[in-house]
Length: 310
Image (cartoon, rainbow, N blue to C red; front, side):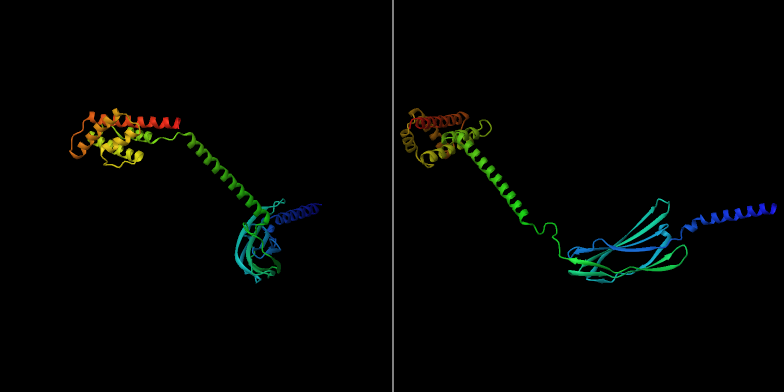
Protein backbone atom coordinates (compact mmCIF):
# COMPACT_ATOMS: atom_id res chain seq x y z
CA UNK A 1 0.00 0.00 0.00
CA UNK A 2 2.81 2.35 0.85
CA UNK A 3 4.62 1.44 -2.35
CA UNK A 4 1.50 2.29 -4.40
CA UNK A 5 1.17 5.67 -2.62
CA UNK A 6 4.83 6.54 -3.25
CA UNK A 7 4.47 5.54 -6.92
CA UNK A 8 1.46 7.80 -7.38
CA UNK A 9 3.27 10.72 -5.77
CA UNK A 10 6.28 10.16 -8.06
CA UNK A 11 4.07 10.06 -11.16
CA UNK A 12 2.42 13.35 -10.17
CA UNK A 13 5.81 14.96 -9.63
CA UNK A 14 7.03 13.84 -13.08
CA UNK A 15 3.92 15.15 -14.82
CA UNK A 16 4.17 18.51 -12.94
CA UNK A 17 7.82 18.85 -14.00
CA UNK A 18 6.92 18.22 -17.64
CA UNK A 19 4.29 20.99 -17.43
CA UNK A 20 6.85 23.48 -16.15
CA UNK A 21 9.24 22.68 -18.98
CA UNK A 22 6.56 23.28 -21.63
CA UNK A 23 5.85 26.80 -20.27
CA UNK A 24 9.43 28.03 -20.19
CA UNK A 25 10.19 31.13 -22.24
CA UNK A 26 12.63 29.31 -24.45
CA UNK A 27 9.92 27.07 -25.85
CA UNK A 28 7.86 30.07 -27.10
CA UNK A 29 10.51 30.83 -29.76
CA UNK A 30 9.79 27.85 -31.99
CA UNK A 31 8.10 29.87 -34.80
CA UNK A 32 9.56 30.19 -38.32
CA UNK A 33 10.11 33.35 -40.40
CA UNK A 34 7.61 33.95 -43.20
CA UNK A 35 8.00 35.90 -46.47
CA UNK A 36 5.28 37.77 -48.35
CA UNK A 37 5.67 39.97 -51.47
CA UNK A 38 2.97 42.10 -53.08
CA UNK A 39 2.37 45.23 -55.19
CA UNK A 40 0.64 48.45 -54.20
CA UNK A 41 -1.15 48.34 -57.58
CA UNK A 42 -1.14 45.71 -60.30
CA UNK A 43 -1.71 48.31 -63.05
CA UNK A 44 0.44 51.45 -63.09
CA UNK A 45 0.58 54.39 -65.58
CA UNK A 46 3.90 54.73 -67.39
CA UNK A 47 4.51 58.14 -65.77
CA UNK A 48 3.93 56.81 -62.23
CA UNK A 49 5.99 54.53 -59.96
CA UNK A 50 5.59 50.83 -59.28
CA UNK A 51 5.65 50.19 -55.52
CA UNK A 52 6.76 46.69 -54.49
CA UNK A 53 6.63 45.41 -50.88
CA UNK A 54 8.70 42.64 -49.28
CA UNK A 55 7.35 41.67 -45.86
CA UNK A 56 9.09 39.38 -43.34
CA UNK A 57 7.18 38.31 -40.23
CA UNK A 58 7.72 35.95 -37.32
CA UNK A 59 6.53 35.25 -33.82
CA UNK A 60 8.92 36.69 -31.28
CA UNK A 61 10.99 39.78 -30.65
CA UNK A 62 12.53 41.90 -33.40
CA UNK A 63 16.02 40.59 -32.60
CA UNK A 64 14.98 36.93 -33.06
CA UNK A 65 16.08 36.97 -36.72
CA UNK A 66 18.97 38.84 -38.27
CA UNK A 67 18.74 39.64 -42.00
CA UNK A 68 22.11 38.84 -43.55
CA UNK A 69 21.52 39.72 -47.20
CA UNK A 70 18.74 40.85 -49.53
CA UNK A 71 19.43 40.49 -53.24
CA UNK A 72 18.30 43.12 -55.75
CA UNK A 73 15.27 41.96 -57.74
CA UNK A 74 15.72 41.02 -61.39
CA UNK A 75 13.57 43.42 -63.40
CA UNK A 76 11.89 43.45 -66.79
CA UNK A 77 10.68 46.80 -68.21
CA UNK A 78 11.41 48.47 -64.88
CA UNK A 79 14.25 50.48 -63.33
CA UNK A 80 15.01 50.65 -59.61
CA UNK A 81 14.69 54.19 -58.25
CA UNK A 82 15.10 53.60 -54.54
CA UNK A 83 14.04 51.63 -51.47
CA UNK A 84 13.26 51.97 -47.78
CA UNK A 85 12.41 49.83 -44.77
CA UNK A 86 10.32 49.92 -41.61
CA UNK A 87 9.75 47.70 -38.56
CA UNK A 88 6.58 46.92 -36.59
CA UNK A 89 6.16 45.04 -33.31
CA UNK A 90 2.88 44.11 -31.63
CA UNK A 91 1.28 41.72 -29.10
CA UNK A 92 -1.70 39.68 -30.31
CA UNK A 93 -4.83 38.79 -28.33
CA UNK A 94 -3.17 35.62 -27.06
CA UNK A 95 -0.35 37.74 -25.58
CA UNK A 96 2.09 36.49 -28.22
CA UNK A 97 4.78 38.87 -29.57
CA UNK A 98 4.94 39.43 -33.34
CA UNK A 99 7.55 41.22 -35.44
CA UNK A 100 7.18 42.53 -38.99
CA UNK A 101 9.94 43.95 -41.18
CA UNK A 102 8.78 45.62 -44.39
CA UNK A 103 11.08 46.62 -47.27
CA UNK A 104 9.64 48.92 -49.97
CA UNK A 105 11.09 49.14 -53.50
CA UNK A 106 10.24 51.93 -55.96
CA UNK A 107 10.53 51.16 -59.68
CA UNK A 108 10.24 53.48 -62.69
CA UNK A 109 8.48 51.98 -65.74
CA UNK A 110 10.44 52.07 -69.00
CA UNK A 111 7.57 51.71 -71.48
CA UNK A 112 3.97 50.62 -71.77
CA UNK A 113 3.27 46.88 -71.64
CA UNK A 114 3.93 44.10 -69.15
CA UNK A 115 6.68 44.35 -66.54
CA UNK A 116 7.99 41.67 -64.19
CA UNK A 117 9.73 41.51 -60.84
CA UNK A 118 11.56 38.19 -60.46
CA UNK A 119 11.96 36.61 -57.03
CA UNK A 120 14.44 38.06 -54.60
CA UNK A 121 16.58 36.00 -52.23
CA UNK A 122 16.78 36.80 -48.52
CA UNK A 123 19.40 35.20 -46.26
CA UNK A 124 18.75 35.28 -42.51
CA UNK A 125 20.11 33.96 -39.22
CA UNK A 126 18.16 32.64 -36.26
CA UNK A 127 19.86 34.37 -33.32
CA UNK A 128 18.54 31.78 -30.89
CA UNK A 129 19.64 28.59 -32.65
CA UNK A 130 22.46 30.13 -34.69
CA UNK A 131 21.09 28.45 -37.84
CA UNK A 132 20.88 30.31 -41.17
CA UNK A 133 18.26 30.04 -43.86
CA UNK A 134 17.18 31.39 -47.22
CA UNK A 135 13.84 32.65 -48.56
CA UNK A 136 12.96 33.19 -52.26
CA UNK A 137 9.92 35.21 -53.38
CA UNK A 138 7.67 34.47 -56.36
CA UNK A 139 7.71 36.37 -59.65
CA UNK A 140 5.14 39.17 -59.83
CA UNK A 141 3.76 40.76 -63.03
CA UNK A 142 2.61 44.40 -63.31
CA UNK A 143 0.82 46.04 -66.23
CA UNK A 144 2.18 49.39 -67.44
CA UNK A 145 -0.63 51.47 -68.97
CA UNK A 146 -1.05 54.88 -70.63
CA UNK A 147 0.16 57.95 -68.74
CA UNK A 148 -2.19 60.03 -66.64
CA UNK A 149 -2.37 63.82 -66.56
CA UNK A 150 -0.39 65.41 -63.76
CA UNK A 151 -1.77 68.33 -61.72
CA UNK A 152 -2.10 71.38 -63.99
CA UNK A 153 -1.93 69.28 -67.19
CA UNK A 154 -4.62 68.18 -69.57
CA UNK A 155 -7.24 70.77 -68.67
CA UNK A 156 -10.53 69.91 -70.30
CA UNK A 157 -12.76 72.26 -72.25
CA UNK A 158 -15.03 72.85 -69.27
CA UNK A 159 -12.21 74.14 -67.09
CA UNK A 160 -10.93 76.34 -69.91
CA UNK A 161 -14.38 77.89 -70.37
CA UNK A 162 -14.69 78.54 -66.64
CA UNK A 163 -11.31 80.29 -66.62
CA UNK A 164 -12.32 82.38 -69.66
CA UNK A 165 -15.58 83.42 -67.96
CA UNK A 166 -13.72 84.36 -64.77
CA UNK A 167 -11.19 86.45 -66.72
CA UNK A 168 -13.96 88.19 -68.67
CA UNK A 169 -15.85 88.87 -65.45
CA UNK A 170 -12.77 90.40 -63.80
CA UNK A 171 -12.08 92.53 -66.88
CA UNK A 172 -15.68 93.75 -66.86
CA UNK A 173 -15.46 94.67 -63.18
CA UNK A 174 -12.15 96.49 -63.69
CA UNK A 175 -13.52 98.40 -66.70
CA UNK A 176 -16.65 99.38 -64.76
CA UNK A 177 -14.52 100.66 -61.87
CA UNK A 178 -12.35 102.60 -64.31
CA UNK A 179 -15.43 104.23 -65.91
CA UNK A 180 -16.88 105.03 -62.49
CA UNK A 181 -13.78 106.79 -61.18
CA UNK A 182 -13.26 108.55 -64.52
CA UNK A 183 -16.79 109.96 -64.49
CA UNK A 184 -16.45 110.85 -60.81
CA UNK A 185 -13.25 112.75 -61.53
CA UNK A 186 -14.87 114.57 -64.44
CA UNK A 187 -17.84 115.59 -62.27
CA UNK A 188 -15.51 116.88 -59.59
CA UNK A 189 -13.66 118.94 -62.16
CA UNK A 190 -16.94 120.29 -63.50
CA UNK A 191 -18.23 121.22 -60.04
CA UNK A 192 -14.93 122.72 -58.90
CA UNK A 193 -14.78 126.33 -60.08
CA UNK A 194 -11.81 127.10 -62.32
CA UNK A 195 -9.59 129.94 -61.18
CA UNK A 196 -9.23 132.90 -63.50
CA UNK A 197 -5.80 134.18 -64.48
CA UNK A 198 -6.13 136.99 -61.98
CA UNK A 199 -7.12 134.61 -59.18
CA UNK A 200 -4.13 132.40 -59.91
CA UNK A 201 -1.75 135.36 -59.74
CA UNK A 202 -3.41 136.67 -56.56
CA UNK A 203 -2.91 133.25 -54.97
CA UNK A 204 0.74 133.17 -56.03
CA UNK A 205 1.30 136.72 -54.76
CA UNK A 206 -0.15 135.80 -51.36
CA UNK A 207 1.95 132.63 -51.06
CA UNK A 208 5.21 134.17 -52.32
CA UNK A 209 5.60 137.48 -50.54
CA UNK A 210 6.58 137.21 -46.86
CA UNK A 211 6.83 140.59 -45.19
CA UNK A 212 9.60 140.80 -42.60
CA UNK A 213 11.06 137.39 -43.49
CA UNK A 214 12.84 138.27 -46.74
CA UNK A 215 14.77 141.43 -47.65
CA UNK A 216 12.49 144.11 -49.18
CA UNK A 217 14.70 144.34 -52.29
CA UNK A 218 14.23 140.62 -53.00
CA UNK A 219 10.49 140.72 -52.39
CA UNK A 220 10.25 143.81 -54.59
CA UNK A 221 11.97 142.02 -57.49
CA UNK A 222 9.65 139.05 -57.03
CA UNK A 223 6.59 141.31 -57.33
CA UNK A 224 8.05 142.91 -60.46
CA UNK A 225 8.60 139.50 -62.09
CA UNK A 226 5.08 138.44 -61.19
CA UNK A 227 3.71 141.64 -62.81
CA UNK A 228 5.74 140.98 -65.98
CA UNK A 229 4.37 137.44 -66.21
CA UNK A 230 0.79 138.61 -65.72
CA UNK A 231 1.05 141.25 -68.46
CA UNK A 232 2.53 138.69 -70.83
CA UNK A 233 -0.05 136.02 -69.97
CA UNK A 234 -3.05 138.32 -70.07
CA UNK A 235 -2.17 140.83 -72.79
CA UNK A 236 0.93 139.48 -74.50
CA UNK A 237 3.05 142.40 -73.27
CA UNK A 238 6.70 141.40 -73.08
CA UNK A 239 9.01 142.27 -70.20
CA UNK A 240 10.97 145.47 -70.79
CA UNK A 241 8.10 147.21 -72.57
CA UNK A 242 7.93 150.96 -71.84
CA UNK A 243 5.21 151.98 -69.44
CA UNK A 244 3.29 154.24 -71.88
CA UNK A 245 2.57 151.19 -74.03
CA UNK A 246 1.49 149.21 -70.95
CA UNK A 247 -0.71 152.08 -69.79
CA UNK A 248 -2.43 152.32 -73.17
CA UNK A 249 -3.35 148.64 -73.13
CA UNK A 250 -4.65 148.71 -69.54
CA UNK A 251 -6.61 151.92 -70.15
CA UNK A 252 -8.23 150.29 -73.19
CA UNK A 253 -9.58 147.44 -71.05
CA UNK A 254 -11.15 149.91 -68.63
CA UNK A 255 -8.64 150.14 -65.80
CA UNK A 256 -9.20 153.33 -63.76
CA UNK A 257 -6.83 156.29 -63.94
CA UNK A 258 -6.22 156.06 -60.19
CA UNK A 259 -4.89 152.51 -60.52
CA UNK A 260 -2.86 153.44 -63.60
CA UNK A 261 -1.21 156.28 -61.63
CA UNK A 262 -0.35 153.94 -58.77
CA UNK A 263 1.02 151.38 -61.19
CA UNK A 264 3.15 154.04 -62.88
CA UNK A 265 4.66 155.03 -59.51
CA UNK A 266 5.43 151.39 -58.68
CA UNK A 267 6.79 150.82 -62.19
CA UNK A 268 9.15 153.82 -61.96
CA UNK A 269 10.36 152.71 -58.54
CA UNK A 270 11.03 149.22 -59.91
CA UNK A 271 13.10 150.71 -62.74
CA UNK A 272 15.19 152.76 -60.30
CA UNK A 273 15.75 149.73 -58.06
CA UNK A 274 16.76 147.59 -60.99
CA UNK A 275 19.02 149.99 -62.88
CA UNK A 276 20.07 152.59 -60.27
CA UNK A 277 20.24 150.31 -57.25
CA UNK A 278 17.96 152.41 -55.09
CA UNK A 279 17.07 150.88 -51.71
CA UNK A 280 13.60 149.52 -51.05
CA UNK A 281 11.73 150.22 -47.84
CA UNK A 282 8.92 148.15 -46.39
CA UNK A 283 6.48 150.90 -47.33
CA UNK A 284 7.66 150.76 -50.96
CA UNK A 285 7.10 147.01 -50.95
CA UNK A 286 3.62 147.31 -49.43
CA UNK A 287 2.68 149.96 -51.98
CA UNK A 288 3.79 147.73 -54.90
CA UNK A 289 2.00 144.67 -53.53
CA UNK A 290 -1.20 146.59 -52.79
CA UNK A 291 -1.18 148.15 -56.27
CA UNK A 292 -0.80 144.78 -57.98
CA UNK A 293 -3.57 143.26 -55.81
CA UNK A 294 -5.92 146.13 -56.71
CA UNK A 295 -5.23 145.71 -60.43
CA UNK A 296 -5.76 141.93 -60.31
CA UNK A 297 -8.99 142.29 -58.32
CA UNK A 298 -10.27 145.00 -60.67
CA UNK A 299 -9.51 142.93 -63.77
CA UNK A 300 -11.14 139.89 -62.15
CA UNK A 301 -14.35 141.88 -61.54
CA UNK A 302 -14.43 142.97 -65.15
CA UNK A 303 -14.03 139.32 -66.24
CA UNK A 304 -16.94 138.27 -64.03
CA UNK A 305 -19.14 141.04 -65.47
CA UNK A 306 -18.33 139.85 -68.97
CA UNK A 307 -19.26 136.29 -68.01
CA UNK A 308 -22.57 137.34 -66.49
CA UNK A 309 -23.40 139.78 -69.31
CA UNK A 310 -21.92 138.37 -72.51
